[in-house]
Each structure stands twice: as C-alpha cells, then as structure tokens.
Length: 123
Image 1: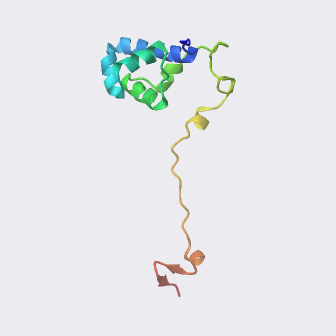
Image 2 (image 1 turned 120 degrees about the vertical axis):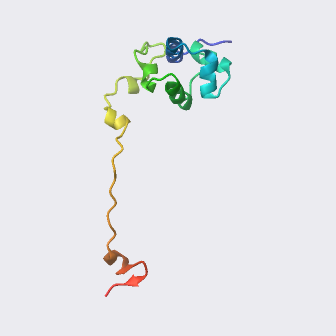
Image 3 (image 1 turned 60 degrees about the horizontal axis):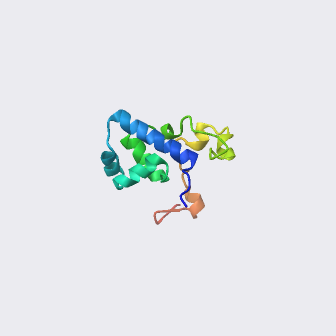
C-alpha cells in the first residue's frame, strides 16, 4: 500500500523544484552537491522522501537561499500542517538562533588555589 506524501514534505519538495528551476540547475547538479543519487532528488521533489536537516541546509546553500525559504507560506491544514507547538509559538529569533556572544572567563585568583600559581609560592 502506497501512502500519500505528507503535506509539508510535498510543499518542501515543490519549493526545492521551484528554486532549482529558477536557477536553471538540473537534478544531477543538485544531487552531486548533496552527495545523493538523482533518484533521491526526484523523491524529495515529489514529497515521497523526507529531507533530513543536513541535506536541507546543504541544499539551501547549493540553491543560494536561506533554509527558511523551504518553509515560507507552508500549508497549515489539518491534513498535515505544522504541529501546533511550532505553528502557534511566538518564539523570537534570539531564542531560536542565539547570538554568538563572546563569553568572558573570570580570572582565577591565586588565593583560591592556596596562593600558588604555576608551582610558585606566594609570599
């Protein structure tokens, strides 16, 4: 029994094909960039194969888009849309993509080590 593709998988596949066609790229070039057979690209585009996160990021790079491109205007119908926890969340960009803050390390004072640093005694 062959099941129908999930609505999200089919939508992402459609977006992959759309962007690939806009760039004039054939399935073989995209398959080479991902390191998968051409048949796998066909399955992704048909929605019968689910794209893993690593391939989605690599594909976004190869197709010269941000990975969020694949989810823009995604279907949210009851038949297979995004889960309610993702769909209704109001998470800001900073919680999803934390900034690369430089963290400072506190200096360890010699008094905390019993007055010794690098084998030298103090006083």
